Structures are given as C-alpha cells and as structure tokens.
Amino acid sequence: MRIEVAQLEEIPKIVEESLEASSWDLDSFDIKFLGKINLHCEFQKLGEEIVVKTKVFAHQEVRCSRCLDVFHRDIKKEFFLSYSQKTLGKFLVVDEDIREEVLLSWPMKPLCKEDCKGLCPGCGRNLNYENCICSK
Image 1 (cartoon, rainbow, N blue to C red):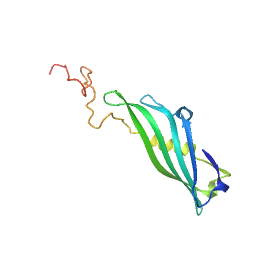
Image 2 (cartoon, helix red, strand yellow):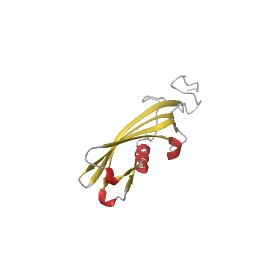
Image 3 (cartoon, one colour):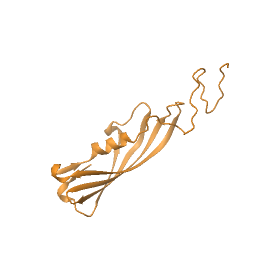
Image 4 (cartoon, rainbow, N blue to C red):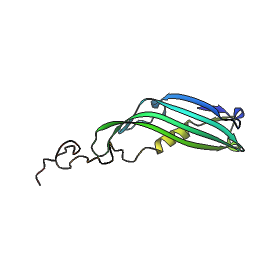
C-alpha cells in the first residue's frame, strides 16, 4: 500500500486493499492464511507526523502446538503506525510495517483451545478425545 505524502491532510484519507497472503510470504508449517488479507488504513497528517490507523482482517488455518489438530481462526488486528514527515520521501509505503505487525501478533504456541490436553507422550493419543492406553 503506497500513498503520496503531499496528498495527506488532517482529515483522514481512507485506503482499503485486499491482497493474497502469498505475496507477503506469511504461511508457515503451523499457520496458513486462507483467502485474502484485507487492510483498512486511515492516513492522517498530525503536525510533523503521519499516523496510520490500520485494521487487518484475515482467516487462518492453524495447527495446535499441543495436539496437532488443525483449527481455523479469524484475525482482527488494529494498530497505529507513525512516521516522521522529515524522514519520508514522496511516497509512504506501509506494506512491510503492516506485515511485521501481523507476524508479531502470532502466538508463540497456538492452541486449539486454552485447556488443550495435547498428545500422550507414550501412546500418542489425542487426550482431548481419547483416554490414554499406556499401562500405569
């Protein structure tokens, strides 16, 4: 997403964009984006700063780090980016900063549910659905 700095005023300028997740290389072993990533940005000039109120909407397929089940979750993230006009050229490009915020919002160990019991280390059964068959 790119916008000409000279066009920005105190009144927010709204820009919306949908893009393929593959263009940002966000998929990993345990998290895969489904469909598009939708962006809603409000660019506003405030004194010597340009503030970008950003909303990101996406849908993910995620593998639980405890039981390895696949589940889906919606991403709804809102954050602000701030830039000094003195350091900007003719255009402001925010794609990489938004991508970083999306990556930083991922949980270290995604869980299908808070109380996920995981897999038995002995028999490998998913303890959310089955009882362990290991001898005690």
